[in-house]
Length: 207
Image (cartoon, rainbow, N blue to C red; front, side, top):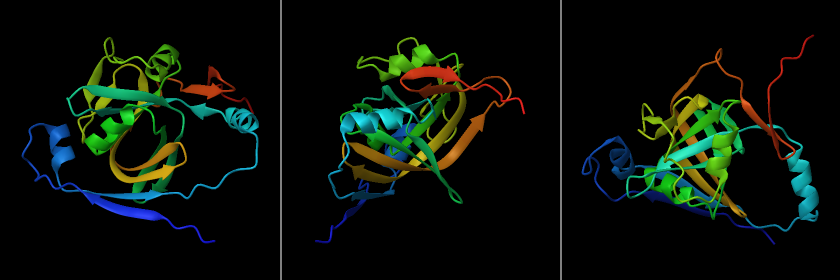
């Protein structure tokens, strides 16, 4: 039996410029988002074994941010971040379908990846929690293109993306973003890393 992909191209039917502000303008302007669904194929490995293997992959820790329909900032901790293409510059993030911030990203039509510094483990836990309000004590500034939150003093790099593709894969959504702006401070901070369910940071190897 041949599996079929479900493909949909979605365009906003709201005219551009009707709402005020950079985030609302981005959400309301005409845009196309490629949408598809990966066919479900049942794996043959034990779920616990799979999680243990994936926990053995050290990853950088990021907070992905957006703005919800009420104009409130939303965000979640994410370690599934990957470069997709250099030309055009594109990245992807994988987000659980049950996470409340996913709707905010889809509403914004954009997202910002905040790559956390080694001193931000507490902030990572805060955005990984189920708390309704995660921005209460968090300082942030608008990203250059989307106006979405860039976390001040916590992120040593940010990537400001316009949502290009939204792919359903099992329990998660794979979101591909085209990079519209980015920045980093290579000298001031080490990254926060996650490995085997614990935080760490980068140590320079002496050759």
